[in-house]
Amino acid sequence: MPLRLHFFGAARTVTGSCFLLETDAARVLVDCGMFQGSKSERELNYQHFPFRAAGVSALCLTHAHIDHSGLVPKLVKAGFDGPIYATAGTTDLASIMLPDSGYIQELEVDQLNRRNRRRGRETVSPIYTAEDAIASLDQFRAVPYGHWQPVAPGFRARYWNAGHLLGSASIEMEVKASGEEKPVRLLFSGDIGPDHKLLQPDPDGPRDLDYVILESTYGDMDREGATIARRRRMLRDEVRAAMRPSGVLLIPSFAVERTQEILVDLLELMQAGELPDIPVFIDSPLAMKASAIFKKHAGELENGSDLVEALESRWVRFTETVEQSKAIDRIHSFHIIIAASGMCEAGRIRHHLKAWLWRDEATVLFVGFQAQGTLGRILQDGASKVRIHGEEIKVRARMRTLDLYSGHADGPELKAWLADRLPVRRGVFLVHGEDPALKALQSSLATLDHVPGVIIPEIDEIYDLAGDRAVRLERHEARLPAASAGHRDWHNDYAELLLEINDAIEAAAHRKAKAVIIRRVKRALEEKSQG
Image (cartoon, rainbow, N blue to C red; front, side, top):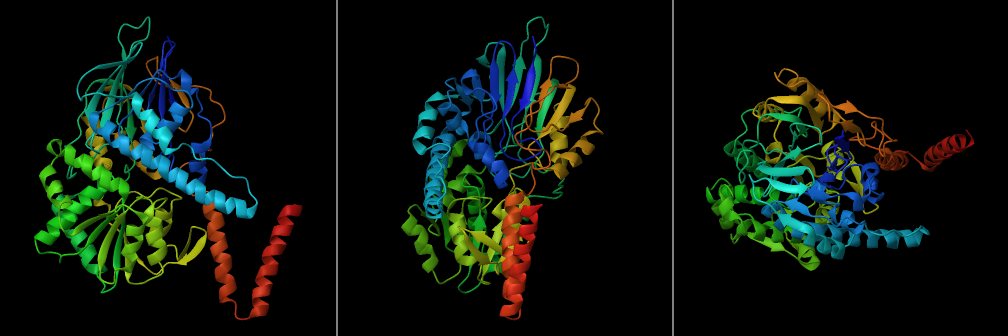
């Protein structure tokens, strides 16, 4: 019986986690995540799945982050009616994150369609609605850590705490093929947490495997000496440097766990007298709902009591309505705003950036990974101007980065995690990373004994896992060329070109010089169209 592994996402890119294990008896999906990053990658979310949704036997979710679970409602809408296996924590978080994702899509598509109608363009539909997301929740089945769960004919799974997020798991899978004496043992790492997570334990997992599918987000990074105490000192210094009498510290942050960790650290620093009392606005309805779930699971979390205390502080204010969010802009003393999304691609953080980027009394502090092509990455890389909601914004605010809040293990931690899983008899696949991280980790893992090969698959590639080594099979044309995955795309270049043209025209000394620039641009376009 053949055993094939399809890489439908998170291959040479960080987002869109989606892997399909296939035998003649069943097809099991591990994760069904949304693509984030460049517009070329995000457009994949609107395309048909590269497999028949109704033909999938079961879905196993590693965790609730949208890049791992965000297309679940689309899958159900497309005809998948099987069980969705996830931990209790993931199930609880998905119950708020997926409807929130649907709501945001409805909101953004409504805004886009208003612009499209004015421009005479066709209107579009959301990938799915909040109602679709709520309907998909009926198919979730909560599974405990450490217990074997039959998921489909010939397949069983066991969940291990990945130390990344409430409910996050590495999924061990045993697949029994007819004629085979032993089942093939695979481990999908999911996202592996670092050693210095505030709320999560160290990641765990089994040994003695055939294949490991390993995340590589920070495979080229070494956070040597990272501790919670050091992180808090660095956060303290960033807040102090940001303090202006009428200024703001904007922190784009994932609403789930990252926001809660930052909140605990800020309140600890205030209570210790290392920071003055500062109003902290959590401007995210999702973060408010997530915080309630974290309080429910506080007994399962490391430092759960500290989180509960921080959430109840009088200096912390949650904003739910749009009116409450807008009211923050009327504050005339220094304050901190934590808002989603973490990569500045959607949500309320974009409105706050639009209101503050052009002001030099503002500071933007990035506390998580910024994928290529996202607004967060463009700002982090030093753009002098950006476009938000179709409007050009001059960037005068300070851009700062504090990467010690990442929920991902760094290169040495990933290597140590894999070393604890050895032996791995048939091979390791590196996923969920951009090229520099993938290649650095591949080189690092080559020094480990009992790892026969480290493969970096491309999107839509298929591997036969039935033999002693993984064999790449013929594949159809990829939906996303390898050169585009994890990179800026033409949409980014186009936006940058528009800004450069505007800059050149504004800098021209007089009207005649401006006209010359415009003529040259028009001539170049005419020559291109004629060629």
